Length: 278
Image 1 (cartoon, rainbow, N blue to C red):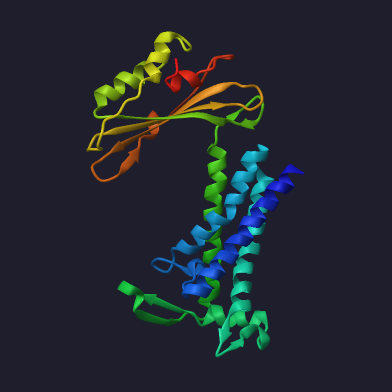
Image 2: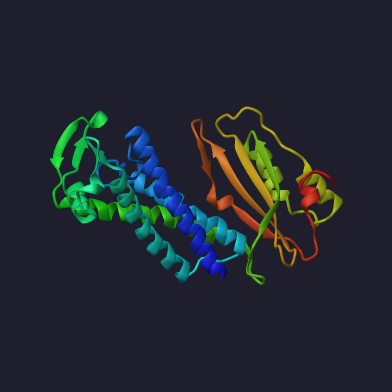
């Protein structure tokens, strides 16, 4: 029943994605789904696949359904349905010289003409016309489908990475989110290396993790640390999840080797400590 609900949620967001793409195309003339870079990078399909699969993410989290082969198969099937729906909605809404194409042309014929007569364009501003793609249009459609799957797959693998309570097989829910920033490696290391040096639950531990650290304006070498206190909705077990980013002067880069997930001792509640309330 719950798996069906997850599939239903995915189907709803897939339909909304197809409808949204059609509306954008109708009002602006821009077809997001067909957007591609360097011909072979189906950027629009990736974005649509990501958006369409987001219903799976929220429903799976709500019903605590872990990613499995059944869910993956459902996502592939609904991805195919969604791509078909995008084409079908284009067909149903296309008007040429005041006449609906659907009134005088079968869908199959429209698809063949649409795919084989599309033109590849190159250069800055896409002003160089490479001519009609012919039968290659079917390969481009297959590439779009692959992009759609990759976009949806990103959501699937995001679910795989969500922290869970293994004994209860439940997704952990966030209780506290704490953001700190450090101006140099020394101040960061002082906090990070000694975070669990004091007994968890002690006054010393609470003072250490409850203090807010701010480096002010980000400069090269500034370190951001996001800490989340998570809890199992069934057994109440808690864990602390941390991600670290360093500013290189232009953008932020996550330091994967410093990411950590620490389970708290049974019966220990650390939400007040990380909130600075103890």
